Amino acid sequence: MTLREITPDEIAAFDRDGVIVLRNMFGQPWIDLLTAGLERHRKSPTPRARIWDRDDAGRTMFWDSMAWHDVPEYQRFVHESSAAEIAGRLLGSSAVHFYFDAVFVRSAGSQFETPWHQDEPYWSVSGHDTCTIWMPLVPVQAKNALAFVPGSHRTNTVFDQPDFGVLNPDDKPDVDRSDFSAIAEVDIPDIDADRAAHGVVSWDMKPGDCVVFNSRILHGGSGLLDETDGLSVFTSKWLGDDVRIAFRDEGMDPDFSEIMKSYGLDSGDRPGTDLLPLVWSSSSKTGRAAP
Ligand SMILES: O=C(O)CCC(=O)C(=O)O
Image (cartoon, rainbow, N blue to C red; front, side):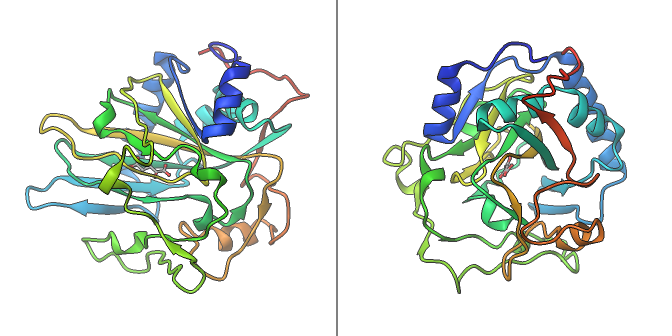
């Protein structure tokens, strides 16, 4: 059960813009649960965890992904919160599989801005019907929140996506690298040079609010924090009806192909198994835990 129904207008706006902010979708118990999960997670990160940025004053940006296998609080959120249903309603999908969680944790005053990019070109799956639910666990101002170019999820352009593997000030070995230059048709436009011309949107948000975005939308920013403000964000990634496993020749980050293969998944398969579980379907109406 969601705190409230997703309206037809919201579904239409998400389809048109590729992004929508939803207010008060998760009650405080879910925020407390994810905050406790993040605390546990930070003490025992996955092998993929990495600092993306460390400045001279010691401020950091920490990232990790697919930690839910080891973090019971994340597991509970995935299976029992309304997140899967929100994704399913907005995507117009009849079945929603969980893909992975990722956290983005900036210490107070971090100036690090996430480079503009699309998500789906990096993924070990492909499809239009995918989304991320971006949830700040602390209040965030619009100027510091993740920003989006509405409608850019509809472009068929293959952009020269940034290589996130270079974000590695601690020189961690064996990080995923990506190079789209051989397949890219165009550079990502200089969106920050004229955000208004690109119609860039972001929102003041408080814990319980979320932004849901199609994984093909151009997004970035989410930094330049004031000296007293940190930013902890929990994201969950969801897969809808047209998604297929897709092991790409170049660019997978995070590269989940090996773990997917170990679960018997191969390119062209529909998501499934305990790795990418079916969490919600329009017919089952199993309902989610009350917020
Ligand atoms: O929060 C951020 O800085 C980046 C989030 C992001 O790029 C994503 O969830 O795909």
